[in-house]
Length: 158
Image (spheres, rainbow, N blue to C red):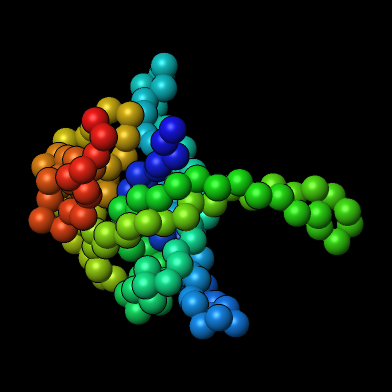
């Protein structure tokens, strides 16, 4: 069975860093992914999904030092679900992505450069990746693990 998610999106806020009693750090932040398409009348439509990301240990320390609001990130991890009872006794549900890998695709301040580059990129149907300033080559390298910063394992069972 596989529980694996790959996301490319922009951070919604600076990471919230907590240090547990054990000394281990955990970083929490939101990541926005968007899908853009043209509706039946030809008008451009965009839908944005927000993902709650948690990074533990060394990844939390990296997030604390380098991740800031607005950055373009590639996040790989697993989906987890939990629930709790709020103060009024209502059951609340939480969906989170527990990050196993985070790659920074832009630095703070690169948003302007990415917007300029995206004008020259062709739009990829059903996605907004080209609007984020990524070329098809960099998208494919990040997703397939062939890029220079890839850390995908070569011992996959398929």
